[in-house]
Amino acid sequence: MGGWFRQKWSGFRARVRWPGTGGLARRLALFGGGAVVVFVVVLGIYWSSEPNPFSVRQNTAEKLAASGNEYVIGSATTAAMIRVAETLLDKPGGYLTNDIMPPGIYLDNIPNWEFGALVQIRDLSRAMRESFSRSQSQSTEDPDLIIAEPNFHFDNDSWIFPATENVYGEAVESLYSYLTRISDQDNSDAQFFARADNLATWLEDVETRLGSLSQRLSASVRQNRINTDTAGEPAAAQSTPANSEVQVQTPWLEIDDIFYEARGATWALIHFLRAVEIDFEAVVEDKNAGASLRQIIRELEASQGTVYFPIILNGSGFGTFANHSLTMANYISRANAAIIDLRTLLEQG
Image 1: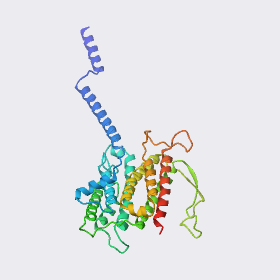
Image 2 (image 1 turned 135 degrees about the horizontal axis):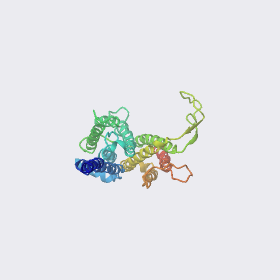
Image 3 (image 1 turned 45 degrees about the vertical axis):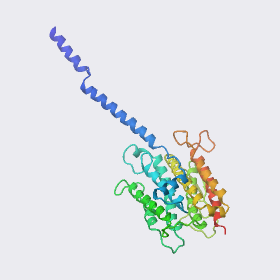
Image 4 (image 1 turned 60 degrees about the vertical axis):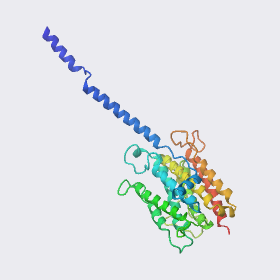
């Protein structure tokens, strides 16, 4: 009988998992893994917050104070571009577009925001190099802007050899050098020319960018559009035939990407236009265009309103749910129309 009990007890012990060091290790591993997952998720939420706006006037004063120079024409625009570029690199999480580790690798809203702001930096840096810093088409280009402009056009998602952040950082350093040189009263080699014609040239690029964003945002709802590619020009031609009516719709997975790209573009543009208010004040007032410029800024500021829903909704135009893309497109279209009016005023003799 004793042998029978010992046999049954041995079988029972084999079937029952008694707590020991192995079970404790597994529980600790599961707890540690869960804590890491929670930490990565919380960190991703923190990194996904959009940067706050900054005061253009205060930023200009701070940047000039570092070099000990006083305000000159062009200081506000250059300082604003430096600050926007620094925001891309120094905001929470740093520059995320080229991240290959979590949480950056799975975040897409802020990388698209970064691209929208980057496009505006690229356009302004090109205008600075080709127009704002030159008195005429035959004048020489500024050596600092020769470095900054192509560096900002470097691949925006290069992880290494070289990393995108390093190349953009070199561009920022060149802009700092340019800012120091134009604000140095003893240095006449570096200049910034505030004229109506070069401002109108840059605004034409802005107008094109905003028009494209507005169309892409509006395409969140399927639309049938009349093909106007060659409208208004009897002799106009295109490479291949196209239908007279086209159907457009943004793929569902790209709707939030375009929305945040537009948010980044308008965020950067608000600061650039506020800088233009300062540097081109005499030009704008001479054309009686101050109200137009302020209205553009107001429309763009409205596009930065808080999104209270955790995801970007894509309801139909008159449906039950909101459509965040159409709301954004409305503000951008109104700002774009005001830019067209402003450019017309600047181009008048």
